[in-house]
Image (cartoon, rainbow, N blue to C red):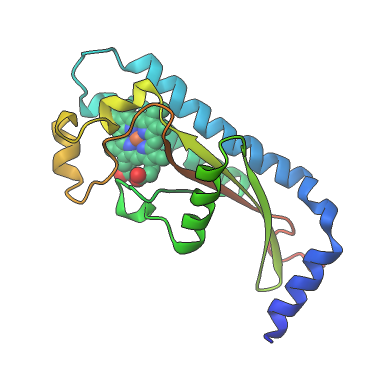
Length: 185
Ligand code: HEC
């Protein structure tokens, strides 16, 4: 067995309480904040029946993207969205993410999964939360033909349509270093 993996397994077994570290809480709060932010902005900027323009997109997802960038830069967080029916191909769920998505799909009461990663001697706390579709999302994630023109053009490989309120849209994972780079345990 790979020594690094073995060491990780031992550490994991020895540190069950670490699921409640302040950094884990921070990751959990950041994931919740991003989900709530997208939801509130979509409700605030999308009027039923009104045309969805690139400007609308900037006000909703653009602001969410800016906050994600800010959290990454100021708090060293790594924030990732993933979906099986994705819009941006960069967000295509990897197999481990697909397994998490399946877990959330199978248990609608599960509101987050916390785990620890050990990479190159550093440990990271990760919190993954499910993202659900609401009425306001349908303006851009509803029926295929009803998608705004700029979305059809910009995402030729788009799969993120045909959703209904309550559907699991995907996941957000926030990863934070527990022992920031340079600090040896
Ligand atoms: C104004 C149009 C618009 C609205 C409204 C909108 N989205 Fe999106 N959404 C997009 C676009 C465009 C992308 C791709 C962004 C990119 O290129 O990374 C996207 C990407 C996403 C992603 C990342 C995964 C992927 O498929 O690439 C998630 C998750 C998501 N949207 C969820 C939601 C949810 C939940 C709502 C409602 C609260 C919502 N969206 C409302 C346009 C929208």
